[in-house]
Length: 467
Image (tube, rainbow, N blue to C red):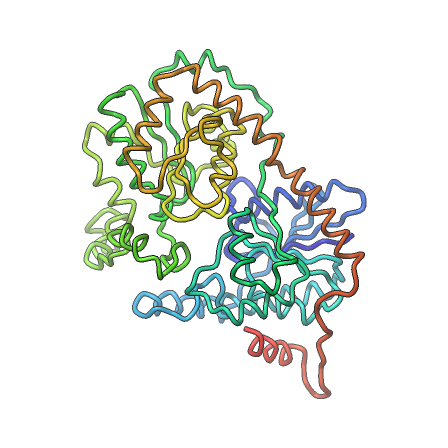
C-alpha cells in the first residue's frame, strides 16, 4: 500500500524542531513505514523545513519530499497578513483558498505521478479539490487537528468534505462537533487520537530522588500565545509562590501570538473579551522595537507576561523558547508537575500526554479534548478555564504531597503508554486504509483536460471552482 501524507506548508516535520502537526505526521508515518506492505511518502514545504539539505530525505523508511513555496504564494501570504490587521477576512488562513495554492498544485501533480493508494491530508481542506481532481482513484483522508468555527464559510467546507473518503479528527470533541456541523459526512467522520513515541519514554523516573530535590519544578510546554492561557498560569503561579516559595516555573515553546480567528469562535463574546487586551495593537511599542529603542519583544504577549511578574516571582520563571527534542524530553522527566491552562478549546493537546508518559502529574483546564486525555483526580487535576485560583490550589496540593505526585504520575504514565502511542495510531489507521481501499469506488471523478488546454491552466480553473 502506497500512502502519502500532505502537510500544511507551515509545518516543520523533521526532528529536532517540529511543529505540533509536523510531529504528528512524523510519528504515525514512521510507525506505518515499519510494515512490510507499506510505502510512505510525506510532503512538506522547503521553506518551513529549511534545515533539510536537498529536496528529499529518507528517514526511518519514510521518504520526505519538500517543495519550495513560490514567490506568488509568499506574496499572497504577506498581503493577506497585512490586510487582515485592518479588515476581517471572509475565511481564516487555515481554510482560505489563498493559503499557498501553488504549493498544493505542485504536491497534487507529484502525487499523480506516484499513484498513491491513500492520500492523508493534514488539516488543509482547501487542498482536497485539486488533489482529488488529479488523483481520482486514490482514497483521500482529511485529518482535522482543531475545530472549525462560525467564521469559516460552511458551503465550501462541505463541498471539500464531500470529496473525502474519510474525515478523521484528533479527538471526540472535534469529531462530534464536525458531525453536528456537517451531517452529510457524519457516517464517515471518526476519531483518531494523537500519540507519542513510546521509545522516547522508556527511562524510569526516580520518584524518591525527585521528592528530595529542591526547588520543586513546574513545567509548561506549548505555544506562548493568549489562547494557551499562559497569563492564567502566571497568575496562578504568583499565588503558589506566596505559600510555597521553593518552586520554579519553566515555560517552553514557540513565542508568538496565534491569530484570534484561528483560535476562538468570533461569536463567543465572553471568550473574546477574556483575551481582548492581548490582541490590542501597540504600534508605538512595536515601532520602537524595530528601531532598537525598546526590547525586541516590546508590545507583544510575551512582554505582557514578563511585565505581569514582580521581581521576586520573575526570578523563579524562565521563558526558554523552542528547545531541541532531547531537551524537551529531559524537561518532562525533570518536572515535578506539568501545568497546562488553555483558555480556548484544545483540539487534542500533545504536551500533557507526553508529560504523563514521563510519569509527571498534570494540572490542566477543562479545555476541549483535555478531558479525554487527563483523568481528573487520577492522573492529575482538571480546573475550569480562566480559573487561576483553582489552578493554584491544585498545584499547591501536588507540591505539598510527594506520595500523591507519585501516584498520579504513575497512573498517567500507564494511561499514556496504553492509549496514546504512534504505534497504536498507525495500527488503527492501517486498518481504516485497508477498508477504504477494499471499498468501491473512490469519491472523486477524473479531471478532464480539453484539447489545447495545459494541465496548469486546468488546475487553475479547478482551484477557482472548488475553493
